Image 1 (spheres, helix red, strand yellow):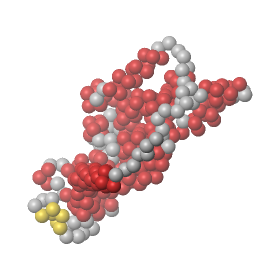
Image 2 (tube, rainbow, N blue to C red):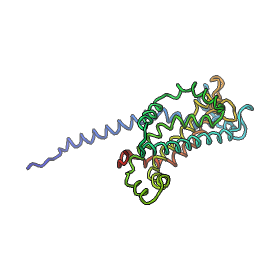
Image 3 (cartoon, helix red, strand yellow):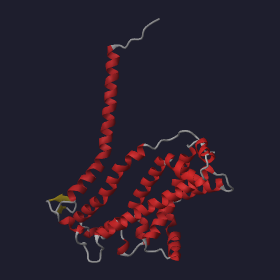
Image 4 (cartoon, helix red, strand yellow):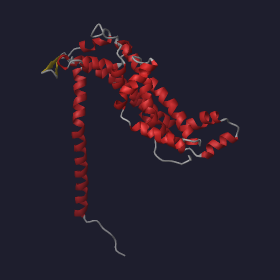
Length: 292
């Protein structure tokens, strides 16, 4: 039997090839990330700059851009802390509706057989495929009929309604991965259907609930198009509405104020993501198939 040996020259060439491939990959990643890094650096520097050369090059240092924290930039604008509260209400409202409706709907679809089950699944997929902007006119008339125009409740229901179909599909996959034996054991031991759902099933699909909750919160925090369309009163503004008002006419944009408010807007959601990313890391694809 012959023994395989590596020639020193071929081994060196293979190592050089791997190093070149790795260097090329890192170079590509750095070049692709450079515009994003420059944008964030401009945002941070601009938030503390007193002057902008040529309209966009930061120069000098000042804290005047942050005066919006204690006084509105315009008398017609609401207090910034009112908009912060509205933003949190919108984000948590969307999260609550999405988690409750999606979890209950996915459990029923995954574990129960009833007429129209396949049609409902297909409908949720079709609804998710519709671009939100194509529904603006229809949603506007619906909210007007319900008396929910110019309210955060209307925006919460619309944003959550568009997220529910996708979230149901995600949660159905988690429920399907739970073996039937676990649920049947609880039912045989005398637990009701609700007790089984609450005490047995929910803990097992916790990572899925965390995933849809995180995405729902970020979606609500970043909501813009429905707010601009359905909300006019400054009392119902969120931070995205505040930033949109700052931009206004592009010839009169206060870039220092815009950078400061944008940085202020980004910090909470970045902190939220840093604290919740461990839950996303626990989400896996596949597993034991227990659904029908």
